[in-house]
Each structure stands twice: as structure tokens, then as C-alpha cells.
Length: 155
Image (cartoon, rainbow, N blue to C red; front, side, top):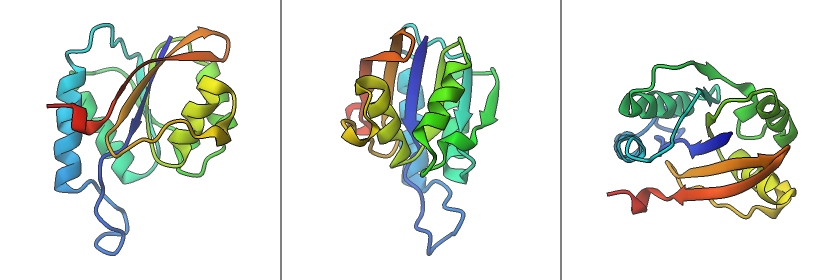
């Protein structure tokens, strides 16, 4: 099973719009990332989960569109910025297919750190807006890094 962790694209400031939709730059970077991901071999996504925040939903929708993904997409409250990492881990444990999770900081950094080294507070990852990390489960709750893409790496 693979887990694709995606931080939402850059959003407009809260002072401009309290719902914080993606900015035009955020949309552009998410589109580029989706176009790039379409060429990644073995990117077999069974479902896309995203946080209830608008910017996460928009990011998930743009990437799904660029990938030509027509599978299930759903809101997952365990992907909120301050959600308990263990709630997310338990949700992932109930699924056998590969997932794409679209979320926020600090949650994604904490989740990735927990999955890879067993300590959420290690914060060994730093997700920029629209960054993507691919993990693969090697055994129950043991994950390895397959690849990481920073948006600046994507042409």
C-alpha cells in the first residue's frame, strides 16, 4: 500500500477571504504537480481523502482532474490542521488500497514523521504548499519513503 501525502496549494490570506481558497499561484502549482504526477509510474491511487477546509478540497479536485482520477473522494476530519495524528493512523489502518491524503501543517509533518520514525514530534519533513510525499507500507505501521516532490522541483 502506498500513501501519497499532499499539502494544499498556497491559499489567499484570511484577511482577504476567511474561507481561504487557493490563490491563483496555488492553483497553478497544484495543476503543475498534478500534471507531473500523471507521469509517475505505479501511482495507483484507490481513493483521495481531504480535510474539510476549502483549500484542501480544491487541491484534491485539481490534482484529481489532472490525474484523470475518477475514484472515490471524501472529506476526512482526521486531516484537519490540528487533528490527532493517531486518529489519522487508525483511519489509514482500516484501508487496504493506496490513498492520497490532502491536508495541512502541522498535521502532515507530524503524520509523516510518525509513520516513518514512530515519533510525530520529530518533524523530519517540511511540506511546502503543494509538496507531495510518497510512502509505502512495508509491514503493519512501518512505512518507508519512496519519493518526495517539492513544487520547485516540478517543471
